[in-house]
Length: 332
Image (cartoon, rainbow, N blue to C red; front, side):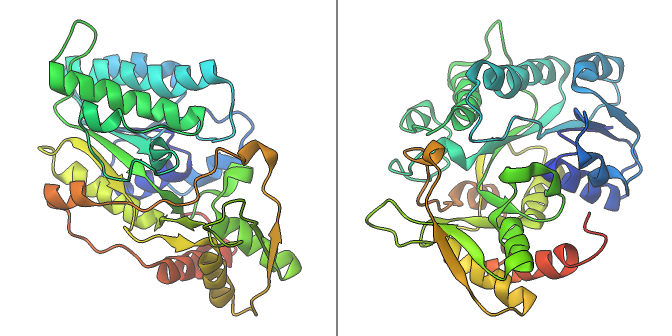
């Protein structure tokens, strides 16, 4: 049995689809649906069960003999969420409770960290899992800090040994996802990838709207991010699933930063539309909390033995736009 928390979400539903494609027939999706449309992300798939987060630990206790691994993708992922108590409860405490349970019951855990932990990038983008290395990072928002707290707590346990609160699972792998785009993100509203947002802007008005730059080193639309296609993220997670002996904290990015203008041009090309860029002021809520440059250093994955090539921005955008966004059935 495999549990995927956030199983109806963007990354979670893609890993559900990939596990089903492998023929795994005991997949349990854990999510809070409410009135959200994200149930569509699971509509194609045959699930063993679908549970609410309030049922999670009861369900794990009932099925611990069959439970093999948990993919923990559930979180409050909005970088604009400012209710820090809520974020800590959902992103930090829940994850650490899972660490404790998986350590006690010898269940593997693959969890989502984030490139938001790197803050403005001034300390670099090396996936250093040491306490000393992690102490250098300064996230720019509560979301990034909550993910950083998890990484730092696990690093402390790694270096100081198990304590009365926590012992580590037989496999624990944290994944610092960079800027992920791809199918099944349609429920995310303003948090959808720029690829998705630009596609709809072009479709409706023929123009892509990008932020102006408030940084002297970056032109309007020239802000740089490491954009990674969701299928590459899934490949990394499946590789870790296939290698239970590997634990650690790993960057998941292409290793090549590209500009938002490059991304927009790739969308225009995929849609066979003429380029038309418009630059707008950055919202006040993002000023001072905005990453102008991210670029994954993949030394951790490479050292662990992962050597798959990552999809280029142009190829990933083309696949996403033509196979999903331009089709009637847009869900994976």
